[in-house]
Image (cartoon, protein in one colour):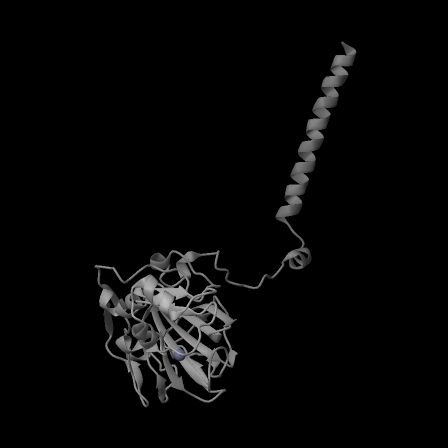
Length: 289
Ligand SMILES: [Zn+2]
């Protein structure tokens, strides 16, 4: 009986002690030493991370992503679309700035049997290249063909691309204003002479920049405040995709390819700009339709 009473006493004593300690620590916490608080306060820089909020990504609802590695990014085939995409380009005239104005050296379309998805504008290395509209930098990197390249995603879903830069002055994920310098003109990548290669894209598919902008040797401006895109705007892409190629293997000849695909040697030479006396190279791509 005595030992039971002692045990009960000890238990109650422990509970009481615990309660006193808890209350004491609460009092201590509610009256913190200001110097201690200052010491404990860690100032973290506000670095916006893409995973923090998808809300801030321009046109996220259309793309369902923001690929910062791939220059082409997410693609939705626009060549068969029956819909018209209504795109608001400008709310105000200050919503657009010319990226660079200069002599046009190459247009959108076929160029030496290769598709050219942009407009080339002459500049000097070091000239400032500006973002046409406000937006977020989706890609800022070096590529073998594009050289230093920047892709900007805009609120309306359009993307603009600026290639062959000598220097990139923005990083992926960065928000840019209309007319903000994003890099300096150059001659990097597959380029012969300093120029700006400028592309316009929608949902990963290229559009002729001339459909959106009036670009001449002395002008670079938006045609209209609104842009309606239909499958017609993607006719060139459709044409490019229809083309089929044969890759030259050991033992191939123009005669053999012409027989295989039922196409004349003359046509093969014409569409591939080939000299029929010149032998083929293994691995060479020969268009046959
Ligand atoms: Zn180009």
